[in-house]
Length: 127
Image (cartoon, rainbow, N blue to C red):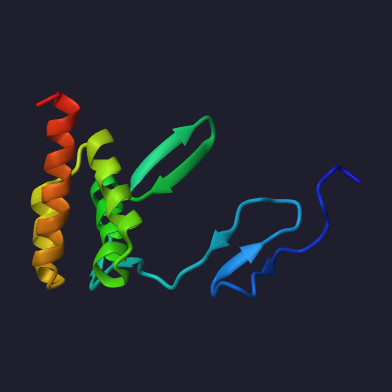
């Protein structure tokens, strides 16, 4: 045996589209294509290369939109907090996030997110 478990990857019965393996902590979540954020498909992905491996990720802007879907539709304050943290650490197109939020009918949620983001930016500058 080469040290790799011969057990098959199995669907995780608690999450639709998720696959687990008893030797791994990670869960692979397979969603139907194309991936979307609300009613729109995701934009151009970000690619992180490490040696011969490539990891395809949401762009920072799409990551913020993804986190905001949880805030907008499930009233999940952690989604808002996570979106703010991404904005504080990465370049995010607020114009695109605002356009998308209006298209989703979430003007009030976007305004609340922007107020909190601006408050956090002022606090970070010591104002």
